[in-house]
Structure formats: structure tokens, C-alpha cells
Image (cartoon, rainbow, N blue to C red):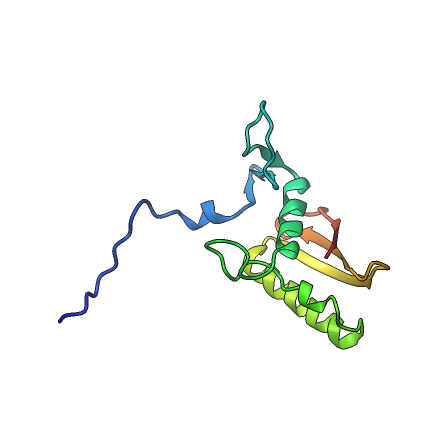
Length: 147
């Protein structure tokens, strides 16, 4: 029995530019607002623009565990596995590596200049990122996420 050497593609192939959550158009960031909420005026997939869409993408990436997102099994950061670990230099380095690896793959347009990790009183992890956009000057911003 012969093994087929061709691959069938069903539907249309999505261009790589369309796969990104954030696009730069006329020096303005646009994309879909996350999380989707029911809004009769704008529908479920309302657009957002500016740094709000970038911050939303960062929060989504940090809060998502790998394997949790359908069709993108390696999307996200495995930050929940550090919840019961002692907050020392080794744990911080592992968290930093986890975040940087995910950013290199899914948020290439964002440059992280500083990462702070804290343990909260409720035994959660608080991550503060100080970032900027690679294509835009003077676009420094901060994002805080509690895991």
C-alpha cells in the first residue's frame, strides 16, 4: 500500500499577518478587545485600539497556561506552577525565562525592560512588567497581573 505524499488543505490559508492579535496600521494599534463581552452596540468582537489592546494581549498571555488554548497548545506561560514554590532567586529566574520565552514567540512587537515578581498575602504571584513597543518611540507602559 502506497503512503500518500500530499497534504490536503481545507478552507483558506490565513496569512501570518492576520494571525497576530495586534497590528500596526498608520502608527495606530488596532485589534480585537479581549475578553469578548456581550455588547449590543458593538457585538462580541468589538475593536479596541492603542495600548489597551497590547495590555490586554499581555494579560491574556500571562494568565493562560500552556495547553489551555485550543489550536495553540504552546500559547501562554506556565506561571501557576510557581504558586507553591519559595520566592527566591531561582524561582524568579525561572519565571523570567518563562515570560521571555512566551513574549519572543507571541508578542514580538513588545519589548520587556523590567520584570518584578512578588508574593501576595493571599499566596498569589503578582507580576509587574515594564514594557515598550518596538516600533513606536515613547510608548513605555506597565502591566500588572495577579496569578
